[in-house]
Image (cartoon, rainbow, N blue to C red; front, side):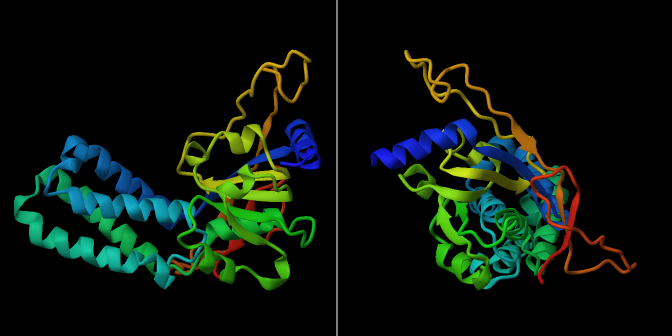
Length: 275
Protein backbone atom coordinates (compact mmCIF):
# COMPACT_ATOMS: atom_id res chain seq x y z
CA UNK A 1 0.00 0.00 0.00
CA UNK A 2 1.41 3.38 -0.98
CA UNK A 3 1.67 6.35 1.38
CA UNK A 4 -1.12 8.09 -0.52
CA UNK A 5 -3.38 5.05 -0.18
CA UNK A 6 -2.58 4.85 3.53
CA UNK A 7 -3.42 8.52 4.01
CA UNK A 8 -6.72 8.03 2.19
CA UNK A 9 -7.53 5.05 4.42
CA UNK A 10 -6.98 7.10 7.59
CA UNK A 11 -9.02 9.95 6.14
CA UNK A 12 -11.97 7.65 5.52
CA UNK A 13 -11.55 6.06 8.95
CA UNK A 14 -12.06 9.52 10.46
CA UNK A 15 -14.75 10.92 8.21
CA UNK A 16 -16.65 8.11 6.44
CA UNK A 17 -20.43 8.11 6.62
CA UNK A 18 -21.83 4.60 7.12
CA UNK A 19 -25.50 3.83 6.53
CA UNK A 20 -27.52 0.84 7.67
CA UNK A 21 -29.94 0.26 4.78
CA UNK A 22 -32.64 -2.34 5.50
CA UNK A 23 -34.74 -3.57 2.57
CA UNK A 24 -38.33 -4.76 2.79
CA UNK A 25 -39.66 -7.22 0.23
CA UNK A 26 -42.56 -9.33 1.51
CA UNK A 27 -42.00 -12.48 -0.63
CA UNK A 28 -38.36 -12.68 0.47
CA UNK A 29 -39.35 -12.15 4.10
CA UNK A 30 -41.86 -15.00 3.88
CA UNK A 31 -39.25 -17.45 2.60
CA UNK A 32 -36.53 -16.35 5.01
CA UNK A 33 -38.94 -16.67 7.94
CA UNK A 34 -40.24 -20.08 6.80
CA UNK A 35 -36.80 -21.52 6.08
CA UNK A 36 -35.32 -20.25 9.35
CA UNK A 37 -38.31 -21.54 11.33
CA UNK A 38 -37.92 -24.99 9.77
CA UNK A 39 -34.17 -25.16 10.37
CA UNK A 40 -34.63 -24.15 14.01
CA UNK A 41 -37.45 -26.68 14.46
CA UNK A 42 -35.22 -29.44 13.09
CA UNK A 43 -32.35 -28.68 15.43
CA UNK A 44 -29.88 -31.56 15.41
CA UNK A 45 -32.07 -33.43 12.92
CA UNK A 46 -30.82 -31.04 10.24
CA UNK A 47 -27.59 -33.08 10.23
CA UNK A 48 -29.40 -36.42 10.05
CA UNK A 49 -28.89 -38.34 6.82
CA UNK A 50 -32.56 -37.89 5.89
CA UNK A 51 -32.43 -34.09 6.13
CA UNK A 52 -28.87 -33.32 5.02
CA UNK A 53 -29.65 -32.65 1.36
CA UNK A 54 -32.83 -30.58 1.79
CA UNK A 55 -31.40 -28.45 4.59
CA UNK A 56 -28.23 -27.84 2.57
CA UNK A 57 -30.40 -26.66 -0.33
CA UNK A 58 -32.47 -24.42 1.93
CA UNK A 59 -29.34 -22.83 3.39
CA UNK A 60 -27.91 -22.35 -0.09
CA UNK A 61 -31.12 -20.63 -1.25
CA UNK A 62 -31.15 -18.43 1.84
CA UNK A 63 -27.57 -17.33 1.28
CA UNK A 64 -28.12 -16.61 -2.43
CA UNK A 65 -31.26 -14.61 -1.72
CA UNK A 66 -29.49 -12.52 0.93
CA UNK A 67 -26.23 -11.82 -0.90
CA UNK A 68 -26.78 -11.93 -4.67
CA UNK A 69 -28.38 -8.78 -6.18
CA UNK A 70 -30.13 -10.43 -9.11
CA UNK A 71 -33.83 -10.90 -9.94
CA UNK A 72 -35.22 -13.92 -8.14
CA UNK A 73 -36.41 -15.47 -11.39
CA UNK A 74 -33.02 -15.22 -13.08
CA UNK A 75 -31.73 -18.55 -14.33
CA UNK A 76 -28.31 -18.46 -12.60
CA UNK A 77 -29.92 -18.42 -9.14
CA UNK A 78 -31.79 -21.70 -9.87
CA UNK A 79 -34.41 -20.95 -7.21
CA UNK A 80 -37.21 -22.54 -9.26
CA UNK A 81 -35.14 -25.72 -9.67
CA UNK A 82 -34.41 -25.83 -5.95
CA UNK A 83 -38.09 -25.34 -5.12
CA UNK A 84 -39.07 -28.16 -7.50
CA UNK A 85 -36.50 -30.52 -5.96
CA UNK A 86 -37.65 -29.69 -2.41
CA UNK A 87 -41.32 -30.15 -3.34
CA UNK A 88 -40.63 -33.57 -4.89
CA UNK A 89 -38.53 -34.61 -1.88
CA UNK A 90 -41.24 -33.50 0.55
CA UNK A 91 -43.87 -35.56 -1.28
CA UNK A 92 -41.70 -38.67 -1.40
CA UNK A 93 -40.57 -38.47 2.23
CA UNK A 94 -43.83 -37.34 3.81
CA UNK A 95 -44.67 -40.82 5.26
CA UNK A 96 -41.46 -40.81 7.32
CA UNK A 97 -41.40 -37.16 8.35
CA UNK A 98 -42.35 -36.15 11.86
CA UNK A 99 -45.77 -34.43 11.84
CA UNK A 100 -44.44 -31.20 13.39
CA UNK A 101 -42.03 -30.75 10.46
CA UNK A 102 -44.51 -31.29 7.61
CA UNK A 103 -46.18 -27.88 7.78
CA UNK A 104 -42.99 -25.79 8.17
CA UNK A 105 -41.45 -27.66 5.25
CA UNK A 106 -44.53 -27.01 3.11
CA UNK A 107 -44.45 -23.30 3.97
CA UNK A 108 -40.77 -23.08 3.06
CA UNK A 109 -41.33 -24.83 -0.27
CA UNK A 110 -44.39 -22.77 -1.22
CA UNK A 111 -42.73 -19.47 -0.31
CA UNK A 112 -39.64 -20.42 -2.31
CA UNK A 113 -41.79 -21.33 -5.33
CA UNK A 114 -43.54 -17.95 -5.15
CA UNK A 115 -40.25 -16.09 -4.72
CA UNK A 116 -38.65 -17.86 -7.67
CA UNK A 117 -41.33 -16.37 -9.95
CA UNK A 118 -40.55 -12.79 -8.89
CA UNK A 119 -38.77 -10.48 -11.31
CA UNK A 120 -37.88 -8.07 -8.51
CA UNK A 121 -34.29 -7.26 -7.58
CA UNK A 122 -34.65 -5.46 -4.23
CA UNK A 123 -31.03 -5.53 -3.04
CA UNK A 124 -29.75 -4.14 -6.33
CA UNK A 125 -32.45 -1.45 -6.41
CA UNK A 126 -31.52 -0.22 -2.93
CA UNK A 127 -27.79 -0.36 -3.61
CA UNK A 128 -28.11 1.44 -6.96
CA UNK A 129 -30.19 4.23 -5.41
CA UNK A 130 -27.54 4.76 -2.73
CA UNK A 131 -24.63 4.69 -5.15
CA UNK A 132 -26.21 7.10 -7.64
CA UNK A 133 -27.61 9.70 -5.24
CA UNK A 134 -24.91 12.14 -6.33
CA UNK A 135 -24.99 11.03 -9.96
CA UNK A 136 -22.81 8.42 -11.70
CA UNK A 137 -19.62 8.38 -9.70
CA UNK A 138 -18.08 4.93 -10.10
CA UNK A 139 -19.36 3.49 -6.82
CA UNK A 140 -18.80 -0.16 -5.87
CA UNK A 141 -21.51 -2.76 -5.25
CA UNK A 142 -19.73 -5.44 -3.24
CA UNK A 143 -20.89 -9.01 -2.63
CA UNK A 144 -19.22 -11.83 -0.66
CA UNK A 145 -18.44 -14.24 -3.52
CA UNK A 146 -17.21 -14.04 -7.11
CA UNK A 147 -19.55 -16.86 -8.18
CA UNK A 148 -22.20 -14.57 -9.73
CA UNK A 149 -19.98 -11.53 -10.23
CA UNK A 150 -20.00 -11.47 -14.04
CA UNK A 151 -23.79 -11.86 -14.15
CA UNK A 152 -24.24 -9.09 -11.58
CA UNK A 153 -21.89 -6.82 -13.53
CA UNK A 154 -23.82 -7.39 -16.77
CA UNK A 155 -27.11 -6.60 -15.02
CA UNK A 156 -26.04 -3.13 -13.87
CA UNK A 157 -27.25 -0.12 -15.87
CA UNK A 158 -24.37 0.91 -18.17
CA UNK A 159 -24.95 4.61 -17.45
CA UNK A 160 -24.85 4.25 -13.67
CA UNK A 161 -21.06 4.09 -13.42
CA UNK A 162 -21.42 1.37 -10.77
CA UNK A 163 -18.82 -1.38 -10.55
CA UNK A 164 -19.59 -4.88 -9.29
CA UNK A 165 -16.99 -6.31 -6.94
CA UNK A 166 -16.41 -8.43 -3.87
CA UNK A 167 -15.75 -7.62 -0.24
CA UNK A 168 -12.03 -8.17 -0.72
CA UNK A 169 -11.91 -5.16 -3.07
CA UNK A 170 -12.55 -3.07 0.04
CA UNK A 171 -9.76 -4.77 1.97
CA UNK A 172 -7.06 -3.83 -0.50
CA UNK A 173 -5.49 -0.45 -1.20
CA UNK A 174 -8.30 0.80 -3.43
CA UNK A 175 -10.64 3.55 -2.26
CA UNK A 176 -14.04 4.62 -3.56
CA UNK A 177 -16.30 7.63 -3.35
CA UNK A 178 -19.17 5.33 -2.36
CA UNK A 179 -19.71 1.62 -1.82
CA UNK A 180 -22.62 -0.65 -0.96
CA UNK A 181 -21.98 -3.89 0.94
CA UNK A 182 -24.70 -6.41 0.06
CA UNK A 183 -25.46 -8.92 2.79
CA UNK A 184 -26.61 -9.29 6.41
CA UNK A 185 -24.52 -7.22 8.86
CA UNK A 186 -23.33 -10.27 10.80
CA UNK A 187 -21.97 -11.83 7.58
CA UNK A 188 -19.80 -8.82 6.72
CA UNK A 189 -16.14 -8.80 7.86
CA UNK A 190 -15.79 -6.19 10.66
CA UNK A 191 -12.72 -4.67 8.99
CA UNK A 192 -14.91 -3.31 6.18
CA UNK A 193 -16.55 -1.01 8.73
CA UNK A 194 -13.65 -0.32 11.08
CA UNK A 195 -11.33 0.58 8.18
CA UNK A 196 -13.70 1.79 5.44
CA UNK A 197 -12.35 2.31 1.95
CA UNK A 198 -15.20 4.59 0.92
CA UNK A 199 -16.33 8.06 1.92
CA UNK A 200 -19.97 6.91 1.77
CA UNK A 201 -20.69 3.31 2.75
CA UNK A 202 -24.00 1.44 2.95
CA UNK A 203 -24.81 -1.99 4.37
CA UNK A 204 -27.73 -3.24 2.25
CA UNK A 205 -29.65 -6.16 3.76
CA UNK A 206 -33.15 -7.51 4.24
CA UNK A 207 -35.11 -6.18 7.19
CA UNK A 208 -35.49 -9.80 8.34
CA UNK A 209 -32.08 -9.63 10.05
CA UNK A 210 -32.21 -7.96 13.45
CA UNK A 211 -28.47 -7.51 13.86
CA UNK A 212 -27.42 -3.95 13.04
CA UNK A 213 -23.96 -3.09 11.70
CA UNK A 214 -21.56 -1.59 14.22
CA UNK A 215 -18.09 -0.10 14.14
CA UNK A 216 -15.69 -1.75 16.54
CA UNK A 217 -12.57 0.12 17.71
CA UNK A 218 -9.28 -0.66 16.03
CA UNK A 219 -6.34 -0.49 18.43
CA UNK A 220 -4.65 1.90 20.85
CA UNK A 221 -2.29 4.50 19.50
CA UNK A 222 0.43 6.00 21.67
CA UNK A 223 0.04 9.14 19.58
CA UNK A 224 -3.65 9.46 20.42
CA UNK A 225 -4.68 9.37 16.79
CA UNK A 226 -8.49 9.40 16.73
CA UNK A 227 -8.55 7.04 13.77
CA UNK A 228 -6.71 4.39 15.73
CA UNK A 229 -7.82 5.02 19.29
CA UNK A 230 -9.92 2.54 21.24
CA UNK A 231 -12.07 5.55 22.01
CA UNK A 232 -12.99 6.21 18.38
CA UNK A 233 -16.74 6.43 17.94
CA UNK A 234 -18.65 6.53 14.69
CA UNK A 235 -22.39 6.47 14.55
CA UNK A 236 -23.99 4.38 11.84
CA UNK A 237 -26.97 6.17 10.39
CA UNK A 238 -30.04 3.98 9.94
CA UNK A 239 -32.18 4.62 6.90
CA UNK A 240 -35.86 3.84 7.02
CA UNK A 241 -36.65 0.62 5.17
CA UNK A 242 -36.35 0.68 1.40
CA UNK A 243 -39.60 -0.97 0.37
CA UNK A 244 -39.90 -2.81 -2.93
CA UNK A 245 -43.24 -3.91 -4.36
CA UNK A 246 -43.83 -7.43 -5.67
CA UNK A 247 -43.84 -7.90 -9.43
CA UNK A 248 -46.76 -10.29 -8.92
CA UNK A 249 -49.53 -8.03 -7.60
CA UNK A 250 -52.16 -9.37 -5.27
CA UNK A 251 -55.71 -9.78 -6.63
CA UNK A 252 -56.72 -6.49 -5.07
CA UNK A 253 -55.01 -3.52 -6.64
CA UNK A 254 -52.31 -1.96 -4.54
CA UNK A 255 -51.03 1.57 -4.87
CA UNK A 256 -47.29 1.98 -4.74
CA UNK A 257 -46.16 5.36 -3.49
CA UNK A 258 -43.75 7.22 -5.69
CA UNK A 259 -40.49 8.22 -4.06
CA UNK A 260 -37.43 10.27 -4.52
CA UNK A 261 -34.31 8.15 -3.80
CA UNK A 262 -32.98 9.31 -0.45
CA UNK A 263 -31.15 6.45 1.19
CA UNK A 264 -29.00 8.90 3.14
CA UNK A 265 -32.04 10.54 4.71
CA UNK A 266 -34.69 9.38 7.15
CA UNK A 267 -37.41 9.25 4.48
CA UNK A 268 -39.28 6.00 3.79
CA UNK A 269 -38.57 4.73 0.29
CA UNK A 270 -40.77 2.69 -2.01
CA UNK A 271 -39.79 1.34 -5.40
CA UNK A 272 -41.49 -0.68 -8.08
CA UNK A 273 -39.11 -3.54 -8.71
CA UNK A 274 -38.18 -5.19 -11.94
CA UNK A 275 -38.22 -2.05 -14.02
